[in-house]
Image (tube, rainbow, N blue to C red):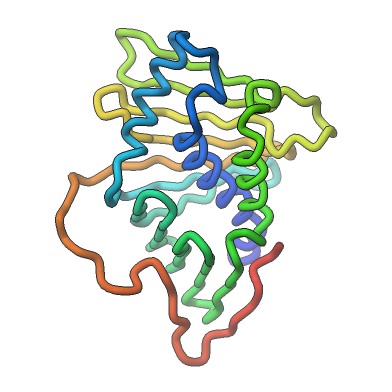
Length: 232
Protein backbone atom coordinates (compact mmCIF):
# COMPACT_ATOMS: atom_id res chain seq x y z
CA UNK A 1 0.00 0.00 0.00
CA UNK A 2 2.81 2.41 0.83
CA UNK A 3 4.49 1.81 -2.52
CA UNK A 4 1.15 2.31 -4.23
CA UNK A 5 0.60 5.65 -2.50
CA UNK A 6 4.00 6.96 -3.58
CA UNK A 7 3.57 5.90 -7.19
CA UNK A 8 0.01 7.14 -7.49
CA UNK A 9 0.43 10.49 -5.75
CA UNK A 10 1.50 12.37 -8.93
CA UNK A 11 -1.75 11.39 -10.70
CA UNK A 12 -3.80 12.33 -7.63
CA UNK A 13 -1.99 15.65 -7.33
CA UNK A 14 -2.46 16.33 -11.03
CA UNK A 15 -6.20 15.67 -10.66
CA UNK A 16 -6.48 18.22 -7.85
CA UNK A 17 -4.40 20.88 -9.58
CA UNK A 18 -6.17 20.61 -12.92
CA UNK A 19 -9.61 20.64 -11.29
CA UNK A 20 -8.89 23.78 -9.30
CA UNK A 21 -7.04 25.56 -12.10
CA UNK A 22 -9.79 24.82 -14.62
CA UNK A 23 -12.35 26.48 -12.35
CA UNK A 24 -10.15 29.59 -12.06
CA UNK A 25 -9.38 30.03 -15.78
CA UNK A 26 -10.98 32.87 -17.75
CA UNK A 27 -13.97 31.20 -19.42
CA UNK A 28 -13.06 32.76 -22.78
CA UNK A 29 -9.96 30.58 -22.84
CA UNK A 30 -12.12 27.46 -23.22
CA UNK A 31 -15.08 28.46 -25.38
CA UNK A 32 -16.35 31.09 -27.76
CA UNK A 33 -17.78 34.27 -26.31
CA UNK A 34 -21.58 34.28 -26.13
CA UNK A 35 -21.94 30.51 -26.46
CA UNK A 36 -24.11 28.38 -24.19
CA UNK A 37 -20.99 26.70 -22.83
CA UNK A 38 -19.52 30.07 -21.90
CA UNK A 39 -22.62 31.03 -19.92
CA UNK A 40 -22.59 27.75 -17.96
CA UNK A 41 -18.87 27.93 -17.21
CA UNK A 42 -19.18 31.59 -16.21
CA UNK A 43 -21.76 30.63 -13.59
CA UNK A 44 -19.45 27.93 -12.24
CA UNK A 45 -16.44 30.22 -12.23
CA UNK A 46 -18.33 32.82 -10.17
CA UNK A 47 -18.53 30.33 -7.29
CA UNK A 48 -14.77 29.72 -7.37
CA UNK A 49 -13.99 33.43 -7.43
CA UNK A 50 -15.64 34.00 -4.04
CA UNK A 51 -12.99 34.39 -1.32
CA UNK A 52 -13.37 32.15 1.67
CA UNK A 53 -12.96 28.63 3.00
CA UNK A 54 -14.36 25.40 1.60
CA UNK A 55 -14.52 22.39 3.92
CA UNK A 56 -15.78 18.96 2.96
CA UNK A 57 -15.34 15.23 3.15
CA UNK A 58 -13.92 13.30 0.22
CA UNK A 59 -13.73 9.74 -1.03
CA UNK A 60 -10.94 8.86 -3.42
CA UNK A 61 -11.05 5.79 -5.68
CA UNK A 62 -7.83 4.80 -7.38
CA UNK A 63 -8.11 2.35 -10.28
CA UNK A 64 -5.07 0.77 -11.90
CA UNK A 65 -5.14 -1.83 -14.69
CA UNK A 66 -2.86 -4.20 -12.73
CA UNK A 67 -4.92 -4.06 -9.51
CA UNK A 68 -8.27 -5.85 -9.49
CA UNK A 69 -9.93 -3.91 -6.67
CA UNK A 70 -9.93 -0.11 -6.42
CA UNK A 71 -8.03 1.46 -3.53
CA UNK A 72 -10.43 3.57 -1.46
CA UNK A 73 -9.29 6.48 0.73
CA UNK A 74 -11.38 8.86 2.86
CA UNK A 75 -10.79 12.09 4.68
CA UNK A 76 -11.46 15.81 4.96
CA UNK A 77 -10.34 18.59 2.64
CA UNK A 78 -9.93 22.33 3.24
CA UNK A 79 -9.60 24.84 0.39
CA UNK A 80 -8.83 28.47 1.10
CA UNK A 81 -9.30 30.49 -2.07
CA UNK A 82 -7.17 31.05 -4.05
CA UNK A 83 -4.25 28.68 -3.42
CA UNK A 84 -4.16 27.09 0.04
CA UNK A 85 -5.26 23.52 0.66
CA UNK A 86 -5.11 20.82 3.29
CA UNK A 87 -6.06 17.18 2.66
CA UNK A 88 -6.40 15.03 5.78
CA UNK A 89 -6.46 11.34 4.90
CA UNK A 90 -8.02 9.35 7.74
CA UNK A 91 -8.30 5.88 6.19
CA UNK A 92 -6.87 3.49 5.27
CA UNK A 93 -3.70 5.41 6.25
CA UNK A 94 -3.22 8.66 8.14
CA UNK A 95 -1.63 11.12 5.71
CA UNK A 96 -1.56 14.87 5.08
CA UNK A 97 -1.15 16.88 1.90
CA UNK A 98 -0.75 20.59 2.67
CA UNK A 99 0.10 23.63 0.57
CA UNK A 100 0.32 27.33 1.40
CA UNK A 101 0.50 28.20 -2.29
CA UNK A 102 4.30 28.20 -2.33
CA UNK A 103 5.37 25.02 -0.59
CA UNK A 104 3.94 21.49 -0.62
CA UNK A 105 4.13 18.90 2.19
CA UNK A 106 3.09 15.25 1.98
CA UNK A 107 3.26 13.57 5.40
CA UNK A 108 2.82 9.86 6.12
CA UNK A 109 2.38 9.23 9.84
CA UNK A 110 3.08 5.48 9.76
CA UNK A 111 6.31 5.98 7.79
CA UNK A 112 7.30 8.95 9.95
CA UNK A 113 8.25 10.69 6.73
CA UNK A 114 7.42 14.00 5.06
CA UNK A 115 8.07 14.86 1.42
CA UNK A 116 8.61 18.59 0.85
CA UNK A 117 8.85 20.60 -2.35
CA UNK A 118 8.36 24.07 -3.76
CA UNK A 119 5.09 24.27 -5.69
CA UNK A 120 6.84 25.89 -8.66
CA UNK A 121 9.31 23.00 -8.84
CA UNK A 122 6.85 20.09 -8.64
CA UNK A 123 6.20 18.55 -12.06
CA UNK A 124 2.40 18.67 -11.73
CA UNK A 125 2.54 22.30 -10.61
CA UNK A 126 4.82 23.18 -13.52
CA UNK A 127 2.13 21.84 -15.81
CA UNK A 128 -0.32 24.19 -14.10
CA UNK A 129 2.02 27.15 -14.65
CA UNK A 130 2.43 26.20 -18.31
CA UNK A 131 -1.34 26.23 -18.75
CA UNK A 132 -1.68 29.56 -16.96
CA UNK A 133 0.92 31.23 -19.15
CA UNK A 134 -0.63 29.92 -22.37
CA UNK A 135 -4.27 30.80 -21.82
CA UNK A 136 -4.70 32.13 -25.33
CA UNK A 137 -3.83 28.69 -26.73
CA UNK A 138 -6.17 26.60 -24.56
CA UNK A 139 -8.89 26.41 -27.19
CA UNK A 140 -6.27 25.08 -29.60
CA UNK A 141 -4.88 22.53 -27.14
CA UNK A 142 -8.00 21.31 -25.30
CA UNK A 143 -11.50 20.31 -26.29
CA UNK A 144 -14.07 21.32 -23.67
CA UNK A 145 -17.58 19.89 -23.76
CA UNK A 146 -20.36 20.87 -21.36
CA UNK A 147 -23.39 18.62 -20.81
CA UNK A 148 -26.40 20.20 -19.12
CA UNK A 149 -30.06 19.23 -19.23
CA UNK A 150 -33.15 20.28 -17.29
CA UNK A 151 -33.71 16.76 -15.98
CA UNK A 152 -30.14 16.18 -14.75
CA UNK A 153 -29.09 17.75 -11.42
CA UNK A 154 -25.43 17.50 -12.46
CA UNK A 155 -23.52 19.66 -14.94
CA UNK A 156 -20.79 17.62 -16.64
CA UNK A 157 -17.67 19.23 -18.06
CA UNK A 158 -15.26 17.09 -20.09
CA UNK A 159 -11.75 18.28 -20.92
CA UNK A 160 -9.46 16.41 -23.32
CA UNK A 161 -6.20 17.32 -25.08
CA UNK A 162 -6.42 17.79 -28.83
CA UNK A 163 -2.91 16.45 -29.37
CA UNK A 164 -2.43 12.84 -30.40
CA UNK A 165 -0.96 10.26 -28.04
CA UNK A 166 2.81 10.44 -27.86
CA UNK A 167 2.90 14.19 -28.57
CA UNK A 168 3.39 15.38 -25.01
CA UNK A 169 -0.24 15.28 -23.89
CA UNK A 170 -0.38 15.35 -20.05
CA UNK A 171 -3.46 13.12 -19.66
CA UNK A 172 -6.18 11.36 -21.63
CA UNK A 173 -9.25 13.00 -20.13
CA UNK A 174 -10.47 15.07 -17.18
CA UNK A 175 -14.14 15.01 -16.20
CA UNK A 176 -15.62 17.47 -13.71
CA UNK A 177 -19.10 17.16 -12.24
CA UNK A 178 -20.86 20.15 -10.66
CA UNK A 179 -24.11 20.26 -8.68
CA UNK A 180 -26.52 22.38 -10.70
CA UNK A 181 -28.13 23.88 -7.61
CA UNK A 182 -24.93 25.06 -5.88
CA UNK A 183 -22.47 24.93 -8.82
CA UNK A 184 -19.94 23.31 -6.50
CA UNK A 185 -17.60 20.56 -7.65
CA UNK A 186 -18.95 17.18 -6.52
CA UNK A 187 -16.67 14.82 -8.43
CA UNK A 188 -13.51 14.83 -10.53
CA UNK A 189 -12.25 11.98 -12.66
CA UNK A 190 -8.90 11.88 -14.43
CA UNK A 191 -7.47 9.19 -16.72
CA UNK A 192 -3.78 9.25 -17.57
CA UNK A 193 -1.91 7.91 -20.60
CA UNK A 194 -1.52 4.47 -18.99
CA UNK A 195 -5.25 3.98 -18.24
CA UNK A 196 -4.74 4.72 -14.54
CA UNK A 197 -7.81 6.48 -13.18
CA UNK A 198 -8.46 8.48 -10.06
CA UNK A 199 -11.93 9.58 -8.96
CA UNK A 200 -12.50 12.02 -6.10
CA UNK A 201 -16.02 12.64 -4.75
CA UNK A 202 -16.72 15.65 -2.54
CA UNK A 203 -19.39 16.32 0.08
CA UNK A 204 -19.14 19.98 1.07
CA UNK A 205 -20.15 21.26 4.50
CA UNK A 206 -22.11 24.48 5.16
CA UNK A 207 -19.96 27.64 5.38
CA UNK A 208 -18.58 28.35 8.82
CA UNK A 209 -17.19 31.44 10.49
CA UNK A 210 -14.83 29.42 12.69
CA UNK A 211 -11.26 30.63 12.33
CA UNK A 212 -8.57 28.10 11.55
CA UNK A 213 -5.56 27.84 13.86
CA UNK A 214 -2.40 29.69 12.86
CA UNK A 215 -0.22 27.64 10.52
CA UNK A 216 -3.11 25.44 9.37
CA UNK A 217 -1.84 25.54 5.78
CA UNK A 218 1.76 24.79 6.66
CA UNK A 219 3.47 21.82 8.30
CA UNK A 220 6.12 21.42 11.00
CA UNK A 221 7.46 17.84 10.99
CA UNK A 222 7.29 16.04 14.36
CA UNK A 223 10.67 15.27 15.96
CA UNK A 224 12.34 12.30 14.34
CA UNK A 225 10.47 12.64 11.03
CA UNK A 226 12.50 11.78 7.94
CA UNK A 227 12.50 14.66 5.46
CA UNK A 228 12.88 13.87 1.76
CA UNK A 229 12.49 16.09 -1.34
CA UNK A 230 9.25 15.74 -3.25
CA UNK A 231 9.89 14.17 -6.65
CA UNK A 232 10.38 16.82 -9.31
